[in-house]
Length: 594
Image 1 (cartoon, rainbow, N blue to C red):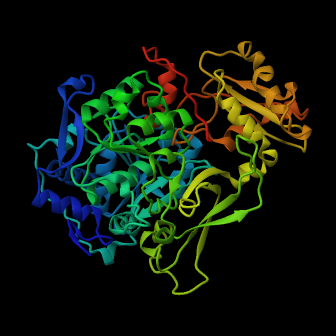
Image 2: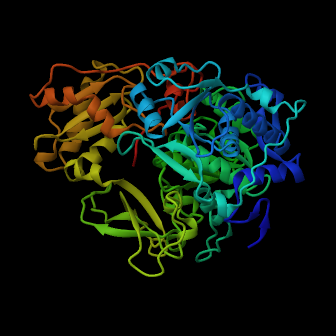
Image 3: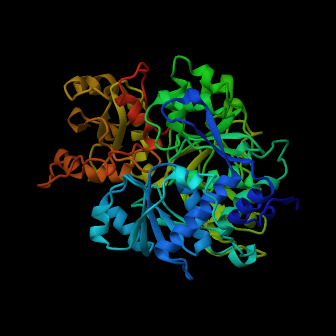
């Protein structure tokens, strides 16, 4: 294998890469930040490896002073504002012998406490301005306030090196970071990435083309300016930031220097000012940008753009594809991401898997799903298989300390409980697949007739999101989150406008009666850390209202609740903010899965 900073590809340690590049190429850029968050006309400042490494060392010395070193990877929980300190902390705790837990700011107190207990946290780091008194009152522990970012990056204040001395063989099974799952499949839980997990992403860069298709490998070569529109505590941001910067040599554009992105105008300002030519953004942000009247000027700046966490609308996909290459990718907190191939511009809805090297298999399942034209689509469950070919890219097993697969079947498997449908073109169908649903959601939605209604409602101007569900073997209910500014009186015509026409095309038992419609205000569906709404948690939130429709109401119901950190607006929540901001950009926004 070729020699790169930090050693051989697939056996490189991220802390070693940072220190080595800082020594040998100190002026190389690791990231780029606005000089002034409130005046982007002043330009962007590249954060060099020398400054970044020195800041990491400052932070490591600070941690030792506050909590000492650790011989057994004691856990420190960090709650900060969305800035570069999240990434610096990843490296600093590796050097001090600790590990760090990143919790989502969207968590309730109970979820914070649960994650802290599961991760066995022994100390807390806080950024100035972040409230955590309720957490520390419930779980007393030593705490400290992390230094300000500008102090950490100050080049006039060099500190003594804090070396990381382990080899890959010694450190591969050591923890690198603990993130939380999104909550899409249940309550969020901690998931640990090891150095071997991260090395699986590094290994993807050396894969050969498949049928003439190059690998995606996050489209980041040395010097490429990479836009990252995801909160830094999120697994997507953690994994991709490390992959495109330290492993790939790209320059990370994480947003503002000292604060989160608050509205679409600021997103557009960062795009234009940063000079980014590729990146990652949540699906709904790609949709928002496509609906801008001047969308072309922002999209054409990118040679390519990756999106995930859901499906873009056909409208957005077509707009992006006219001016750039929009690539859909897939991953999971436990699995990281398998290798992907470069897709065709018109196939923005499909993930192009390297099925052989990724250990990806699709197994047919007898489940019903009907496409827009009424035809039944074939459904296959995505299963990850750990075999000798895929072992170098198998983040799930690497995170559990398993890096060598059996030499012959049976091979270990991870069934994702997700169903996909293949590309209709036989030449693409072996690797191009479109996500349909999680299996439990299909099984709970009356043979998927309700899914079609959800999709139809999602396009209605009065609807932000919709869930169609069935209880007690009775007629389905439509739980509808209204769009911004739409009240229940204005929504009274929705059944006649959108639901009744859909009822005509489905069996009687799958029809939603007018009495089975529940309207809730904009912003009341529960969202996960990726910004998407959480079906099961939302159904639990409105369990009393659902039971009331079925004549089984309970006495109490808890509805609403303020965000935990009102002063911090998550990057992944930009869609909600766009609709709330009174700006000159007004357009419909949808948060749906196609």
